[in-house]
Length: 457
Image 1 (cartoon, helix red, strand yellow):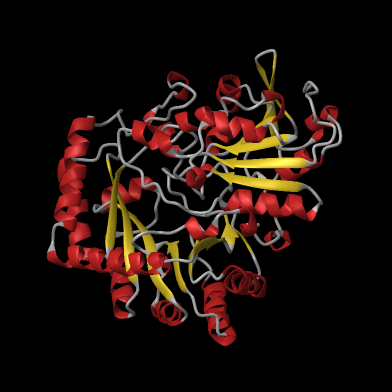
Image 2 (cartoon, one colour):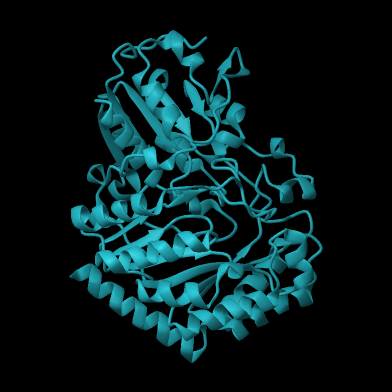
């Protein structure tokens, strides 16, 4: 049973913390640090405010406060929730979360609660290292709300979706299923965030924000971590989501929005209706999404472009069909060509995610990935080393034992099959060959100029 801590009977003033993602400096490969609003904390904050709680969201990626100052602020609150995952969504977790442990160093552990993908996957190790009172597992918002409203500490163990330590032994409350009705979510509490600070430079300008129409992804990719939101797709109704977008534009002045669904265009009927709804309501925004190359067709590309879609992110992953097949992605190289042709036709910019270091991947297949990026010629390409994230099929295939790693660390690449020095050579070669061409240099430069202009404005 959880012991009673000071102030926990009232539990009326709640602090939600998004830590400063400084741990990226400790990683053996680059992960992009994007200054985006923490959507999940904003949703949890809105739910808590709706039930009469006083809430503050401290986004330390913007504030940049020292751990000691964070601790002083936390001392004014009855309960403190901190995430290990600053970047929404959670399918590609940070590889080193030293920043997370630094951020909570001076917070009273009796009122500290933790959440995020790392916490969900490794609750025992992270609870022990952090000293936190309890861990929130999987989809966090409803559990956070019930904990914040809980009248007595003795009732915490009845709240589904929790884990805690008793004499160094991990204990669980009943598991919590995924939220079925996303329409019941309030609009995010963006008023609790420094919205003017967020941007997606140089890809999109300001004012910038993120929203979600759905959760979950039915894909069978073996390298994405899906422990937070699961594979079953749950979607808001079209009119409900249009209302939310319209609210974000009118209330917060958003002009640039990234829809953070893991596969935005999987439901063609929804996307067609949504895009037409934007046009019918006169909602003029510059928007971006990510989806699978096999989702795209002529009708979708045309209306997405007409309604303001200026950029689509695609996970192309590899340039050899043999490698694509083993990932479970369910796409072929030819599918990538078809999707990119459609986007070029309708003047939608594209950004591709591509990886090196899959199990059994040969040097010539890595070269095929570089060649594919050049032949597809997207607006942007991001190259990474594939990571066997704990809790994924890829980690199981590689034989990863996460117990070999300290609580703050994940593997940084697939060291089972490849040497880091060779992978980094391939990675650097990919970036040089893709971006040191006249076309990409010009495009990226022009995007940077436009984004700087929007930021200064």
